[in-house]
Length: 464
Image 1 (spheres, one colour):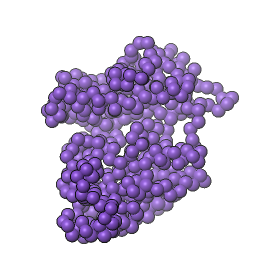
Image 2: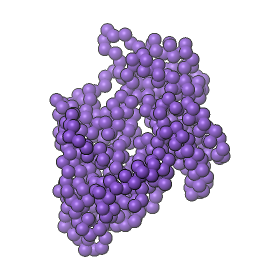
Image 3: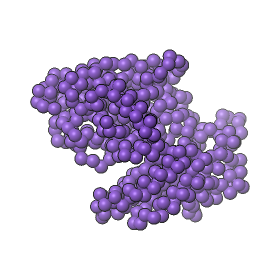
Image 4: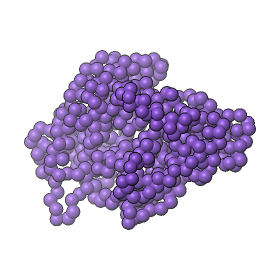
């Protein structure tokens, strides 16, 4: 960009919604990954028409663009490091309507997820994409990365909850894919190309999302398990006994100890330690129906799948138990340098994969491993943690070989190196572990069909 470009963009949005202030460039030029941001400017459109005009101008003048949402990503998809123009959608945050008949909510891309949830709850409904970062992540970013979340086992992830989209292409064309339809069989469904595209094909400016009935009388139990195989068998028992969980999570004893270390107010509900814990959340049965909890726990004990269990009997206990799962990432960040892997496997393959992975992890010295995740959908979060005293670059180099060993196991078991965080810049060198050369070539051809000059979030997912 040059001064003439800046003035032209100023003419589109006004001089108060474009910035080259160093603080703004730092804040809007990166996500949660460690990187050095270097955007040329940040622009803040308020309407789809402004986004269209900005993209059309950038396309004509060959200005590279990085779309920006809440910047809570962990793969570098929102990083601007090569003088790109950052387009922040944060001022496009209106909720445009809630339809209780169609069970949907329509909002602009910059709407905060927690705001969507509150708006739905005020109408007696529930927005089911529930994330730890819901207080800051934005709808458009969730769509661009196909965010998963804690409730995926019951309601699906972002992709399963998108009804329609409004998307602006690099030449300024506005695609109205905002059908608000439950059934629409007209051939290729274009909206699915933009979901998980990380802003490389177009910029989502509006979306219509599914709503569901508000969960009532949620019950929560935390169970201690003797090994990981017991965890997967426990999920099988849940399915066989007709329990429909709203969440089924797991974490190790190391994770529990870490949360207790950094959150002194947290209360450990167990007398004895256990290798692994699970959290099972589900809705209480209607009045008069048989409550499955007691018989389920009894059978799980008899089968040796659990060694202990506690049930939340009030809101304080409920929040305390969930806190052990939700505050792991925060505690890990306090503990030391971190490398994260976000992988997924077929659920039935997890016990064998875990056993093989532990052999790989045992070879790395001076690094702690904290393992947790969404066991109900086969999603594991691996956190390699080293001492803050160690140089971060040295720590990354130390853990890289181990990471590659884990990815080879993921490939062996036909899993994914990215369950919900995307590829961005951090994982593109490893895309070959779950994407063939033929697949990658097709992806590149799709990218060039939408963005022939490679201006939209260039260098993300793969290089052209």
